[in-house]
Image (cartoon, rainbow, N blue to C red; front, top):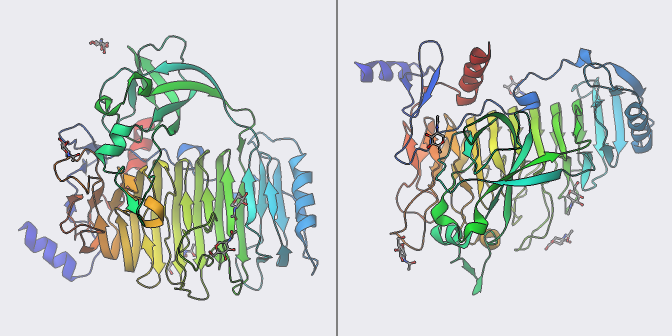
Length: 526
Ligand SMILES: *[C@@H]1O[C@H](CO)[C@@H](O)[C@H](O)[C@H]1NC(C)=O
Ligand SMILES: *[C@@H]1O[C@H](CO)[C@@H](O)[C@H](O)[C@H]1NC(C)=O
Ligand SMILES: *[C@@H]1O[C@H](CO)[C@@H](O)[C@H](O)[C@H]1NC(C)=O
Ligand SMILES: *[C@@H]1O[C@H](CO)[C@@H](O)[C@H](O)[C@H]1NC(C)=O
Ligand SMILES: *[C@@H]1O[C@H](CO)[C@@H](O)[C@H](O)[C@H]1NC(C)=O
């Protein structure tokens, strides 16, 4: 009976979910439950991503225009930057905003703009090619930067107990919580150990006869959270911890993770860039330029933008040099950022480049990227979240790509964790989470604890991080492929399927994991 219904629905072409996921199930009221594997790991909750931990962005009308800048016909960088400086000097209103700099309709010539004060919005007059606002960028490395200046100051260290913490939960057991309180902002510090690198075979990467460093042993990985409760030595975090913690992989007691409170004076927030078009010169041969980067910031946004020909070229020879090559980047110290309704377009194709651009590089944590269209271009990695060590929860939701087989929605390098790709449609290309071996000098395992949920692609390929040099080594980390449509492919350097799969080849309920989790959270908090 079930099979018959499924067949009928599919033959009608209806995008109706006919069967529930095995891993995340919803009751009739939308309350979700999660299936754990035998280690206790489960798919994490992504509902805390984005502006103000999952709130809608403020309507433009809430933030009044304070200065209007008109195009001059010449270089407009200084007049726009001066207006930003003036609005930055205004007081904050009750909503936490100083106001917006409005760019009038017309075409502006711009080099680099900097937003470095909380509460300031850079706003165009719309996306219409003739009646809206267009900024023609000169082709500098970053056209708009949203950047704070200060760094966090840390308090004393609170070590964890040496117990296994499965992936997907939001509690951590500490040796002592005395001195910590609910509402504290904390970083959790973990160390990359030799045993962990060895477990994944990442100490065996050799390229051109030279050993490659995947992630250096001793590197510190940080996760930015808030304590929401403290109970009998265990702290609860405002969002899931984005990895498992395995004491058997510590090299010594020095590697026991710890928590520190922080104070971050003037981490900028309530900064937005919205409602305009930005065009990069199509002909610049070594175009490694990005439109926008956000760092040392929280509760910021980028919305309603048309972005053309950013980050397309450069690096025609093998071997990467340092370049941004993205369209929008959130840096490792960004959190609660929403990137919404981008229309990213390429007017030409250049498949000769060695390292294609990563269109959206989402480092940091609790980043929400949604409702984007990407068209044109050739070989690229849209949503290459992240570059190195993005720490989820981070979501890419509802993205449509119209391009060729070179369009790959894949992580780029070196152990990002806790990223969700939800309802991404890339019909000619790839949506995957795979091994990259010695590519790019040892990208190796790109991601752990990633989820691909109801995505559509020519090829879906998901691999669990496992030791490619030692078939007997245990597989302790997972990447999940749930629902969706596309050829389920083993992925790079693998002859057999080696991910963790749930209903691949058919759409599952809930249609969107992120939306279902957000609804479930809102219901629980009401
Ligand atoms: C408190 O934590 C300790 C150590 O983890 C555990 O043995 C004990 O059962 C816990 N007590 C309660 C009430 O949860
Ligand atoms: C990057 O590499 C390319 C080709 O190897 C070279 O032409 C270009 O100048 C380099 N760019 C920088 C910023 O070093
Ligand atoms: C990359 O972006 C950062 C931050 O905006 C900038 O400082 C740097 O110069 C850029 N690097 C390159 C190679 O373009
Ligand atoms: C993306 O494309 C769809 C379908 O054409 C359209 O409805 C939507 O408005 C587009 N979104 C953006 C951000 O351009
Ligand atoms: C392969 O993995 C197994 C299981 O962890 C281990 O016992 C063995 O020593 C490993 N072999 C090598 C060559 O590292």
